[in-house]
Every structure is written in structure tokens, then in C-alpha cells.
Length: 497
Ligand code: GLC
Image 1 (tube, rainbow, N blue to C red):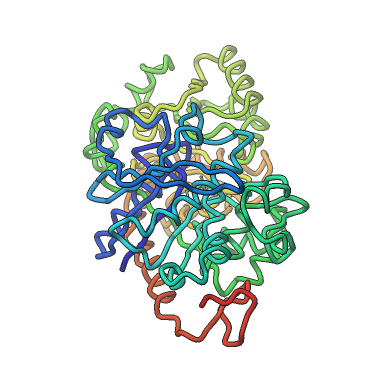
Image 2 (spheres, protein in one colour):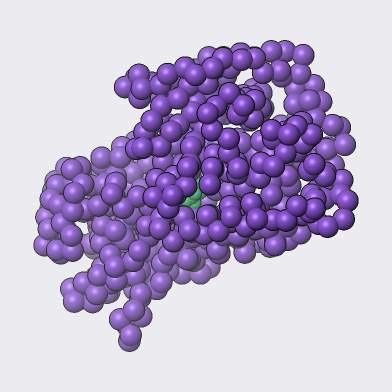
């Protein structure tokens, strides 16, 4: 089976968030299942020079963007045994950031167009193109609207994975005809219109043959109005083409027994973990004491990751005998507030406003509790990494957090963490108190840590679920056609052949 991943970031080439971890690890497991999987990414200017050196140019051609031409080079490199292709264009991608430019509409429309245009030049024809998030949302729109009559393209099936419905890729409608060269009829509720603007994400949701998202709970949540994303009607309509598949983590990259970044390697030894804690405390200038529970937050310091709850309950938490460690960057409001509190309580809080993978791993290894009280969380990878390092997650029951963390039950000894339901600081604080009580009893804590480390968050099972979807799409009988929402027997508006 030939599958092509299309995404805007992937480890080790470029990363801003969890999407990159998925793109850097799921293909390896798919390949282990016998899939010929390849990945296309933009070639960004900030990719590390040693990785750029591996790339060789395969082909150059022009892509039309309305009345203009943009040149495009396709490069190729092997990484972890996977073939990667890169779409090169200095104007679009040689910049200091990945996203957030005024012309993102052009940059990522170009990316999807260029990927499709490059296919006949590659020595590989995908049967399924699997696109990720808004940046590649237009791919299925272009495939169905620009290439549906072309023999080469017409049997290619598409899967679209939503890693976060919050980012919709919204742009002014003026670009529809001029830049994107799409039919004005698509500016409608059944097309890619979203409250007066164009949405790349909606394009992926409407025109892809199958939609997945990154946890079963999130797949249910986005069909309701709870998070006010205003796409629940469409997702309900397409619910027979929507599945939540939990993400995995790369077990070889995140392994406390071999991780060279941590102070002392370990499998499940509590004393080695305590040694990591002492050295972490020393490094972060916190009092060295293995009896004081260390609560860590690693991730974007933004509201929807639950910073509102943490800052709301901070004064109560600080009364407790705990140490808090923060690592990440985010909104100025939370960065500056936390730094200010840290100046007042240097013995209790360490705030590290940086992206630092090596320090992150030291914290995963040295902390006792990993906190992630998100407002919404499509999947979340950090709580899984924490568990792999024997650090107990404390989360809000939403999305993938709900699917991976089972609250500890004192009576049965089951459960791998702590969780609360309502999005408010008091409920979170009560759960912290409950966790701190358990922490006092070494034996209880050992049981929870053992349960957490025993979980299998590898890609094995999820990869098989993706393969079942690909297979299903390829087996769909000829004679069905696309009606804008589903394959139906009757003649439809967007007939494929
Ligand atoms: C996004 C989501 C996160 C998910 C990740 C990978 O960053 O916010 O919850 O784990 O994508 O799918």
C-alpha cells in the first residue's frame, strides 16, 4: 500500500508542536506494518544545516497561483528509513517562523498545489494521501476540484487528520478565485466558507474521503457545541466518515532506560528517579529534598492548556509543601505572571521560559506529578511521556487526556493518575490535594507509578487503525460517487470519475 503524508512540520526537520512528533513517528510504525509510506513537508529556511545536506533536488517546475507563477523544487532525503520529500520555494518558506504571516494563505495554498503537481514526477504514486491540519486542508479541495478528470489523480483517496480544530486557517474570501483558482460556488456552507471567510481546515473536512482526529473522546466532543468551534453540524453530518484514533509516542525516543539527557537512567527504580529529582532541584536552584513533591508543567503557556486554572489556584498551591517547575513559552500574560511569582517564591517555583528538549526530559524524569489541566486537548503527548518516565499525570478529563489517564482508585489499586471533570481552579486544587495525600504514602505512589509505566502508548495499535481506514477506502466499490459529504450510489455533485 502506498501512502503519502502531507504536513507542515515533522521531527527532526522542524517542530513547533505535537503535530511534528506525530509526523516524525507514526510513519516508522506504518512502515513496520509493511506500508510504503513517504512524507512531504515544506523546506523551511530554519531546517538544521546537517539535515539540509542530506537533501537532493529531484525536480523543478512552476505552480500557478492565479495569474502568477511560483517556482517549486522537490527535494528528497532519507530519515529513519523513511523517504521524505520537501517542497522548496525560497519566497514562501525561507523565513524565521513557520506560521503567522499575512500571506500564509498563499504559502500554504502553494504547498498543497505543489504537492499535487509534484506527484507525476516522483517514482512513487500514492493510493492514499493523508493530510494533516489546516496547512494542508486545501489538498483534497484541489484534488477534487482541479484534478478529478485526470486519470493519474482520479483514484487517489484522501484522509485528513485534525490535530486541533481550534486552528481553522481563516482567510479573506477575496482569495478564492484569484489566488486559489476555485469555483465561487465553493464559497458556501457546503463548501469552504466559514462565517464570511475561507477556512482551509473546513476544506479538509468537507472534501477528504475520511476524517480522523487524535483521540476517541475528542472525536465525540467536536460533534457537540461544547467548545464552540462551530463545526459540529458538519462533523455530525460526516460522522460515519470520522474516527478518533489515539496518538502514540515513539518508545525508542522516550525511554528512561536509555535517555542520555537525564541524570540517571532507570527502568522502574524509585531510588533512581529520586536521584534525578535531587539533581533537577540542584540544577533549577530549588531546595534539594526528595520528600517534597515536584509538580511540573511542560508545554505552551497558554490559556487552553489550563494556565488559567493553574494561575487561579496558585496561591493555594503555594501554601502546600510542594515545588513547581514550569517549562515552555506562550502568552506574555502567563510568562510574565509566573516569572513574577517565581521572584517572590524562589524556593518554591522554577519558571523556565524556553523550548528545551533536554531540560524537558530531565523534568519528566525528576518530577513526581505532571499537570495538564487543559480546557480542551485533542490528544496531548506529554502526559504519555510523563507516564513512561514514571511521573504521575494530573489532568482535566477532556479529549486525549481522558482517554489516556485513568483516575487512581484507592480500593482497587487501579489507575495511572489523577483527573477532574469541571474546568475550574477549585476542582483542580482538590485533585492536587488528593494526589499530595497519596504521595505521602510511598507504597501507594509506587503502585500508581507502576500502573503508569505499564501502559502501552506505542504506535502499534493506532497504526493498525490507520491501515484499516486506508484499506477500507481502497476497497470501496467502484460505482460510488462523492456527493460532498459521503460516497453514495447515486450521481452526485462532485463525481470522482
Ligand atoms: C496538537 C494538539 C495536541 C495533540 C497534537 C498531536 O498539538 O493540540 O493535543 O497531541 O496536536 O496530534
